[in-house]
Amino acid sequence: MLVHLFMGVGEDYSVCTGTMANSERTFIVIKPDGLQRSLVGEIIKRFEQKGFRFIAMKLIQASEDLLKEHYIDLKDRPFFAGLVKYMQSGPVVVMVWEDLNVVKTGRVMLGETNPPDSKLGTIRGDFCIQVGRNIIHGKDSVESAEKEIGLWLQPEELVYYKSCAQSWIYE
Ligand code: UDP
Ligand code: MG
Image (cartoon, rainbow, N blue to C red):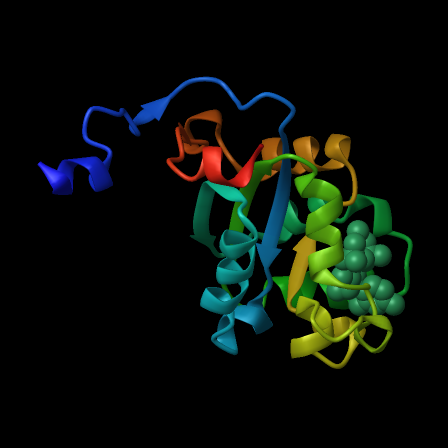
């Protein structure tokens, strides 16, 4: 009987529909260098330990067309071709995290685009050195995150579920 108290039997944590109140979604990609350098677990750990909740995650080899569309706003920049090649050089892990202020906080956790400008304690500040190998992508606005979620994922790949930690994370 005691075990039941701790396990939360009677509660339903299965897949459900809808989102949490006040929440937003962000789109994160662990780039090929992050995966090859075995930083996937470390990066996921940071988001999990913050208290954020993932609602999608997949390993994918991105096509050139997808990456060109993904970085369309940067198409005239001199590093565009190299960026697409880098992002295609191996599989990536794409994730959607949903929670309160996850877009802004996610960017803070990533650090600055250029690693030397990133504070220690951020992902880019701790694990990388050059802008062209900065291991992680994350959106800086709710609108652009939604656009990228639609580009990379099918609606059925987003999985909503109740988290037993919510009442301990939110007042
Ligand atoms: N990038 C690069 N050289 C530059 C600027 C950017 O290779 O001088 C790459 C880098 O991988 C960066 C990505 O292009 O993460 C997208 O650039 P953006 O300015 O959107 O930075 P982010 O949003 O990723 O911080
Ligand atoms: Mg950007």
